[in-house]
Length: 154
Image 1 (cartoon, rainbow, N blue to C red):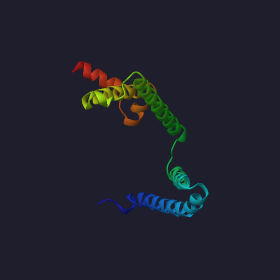
Image 2: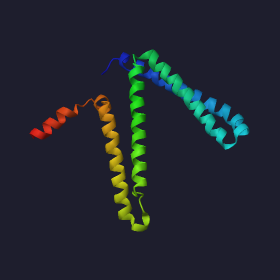
Image 3: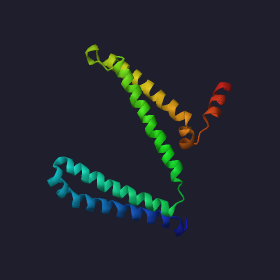
Image 4: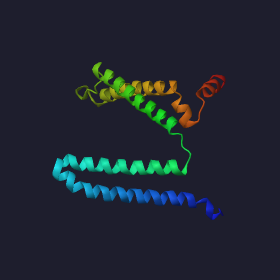
């Protein structure tokens, strides 16, 4: 049996998370009517975004307070992920303009092949871009060079 001290810090952060979600709900309800009157349906989306950003901000502050997080490296990885998504989108658009549109008039099978080819090219581009910046190696704690050497030997 584990000592009681083992789960107390996790329970404290869990309670904070529930509190932050409650704050988010209260802010969402408080802003909903005002934003609905002011901006119509889009105002509801704005109130959701504002309350979610408040929840995220408070949660990030508490994570920083309770754990030693290097935000510089985290933000760098987030930037690489977002740039990789941009590369993925650009490659998908290139495939779309080259005619890989998933043409349903040609049949579902051909549309699936075109979609799989365009998706495969986009995913390979994303992986190659993030591999250059060592993102998969850092997040997955894998050394792909060692894996490739083992595969060649085996």
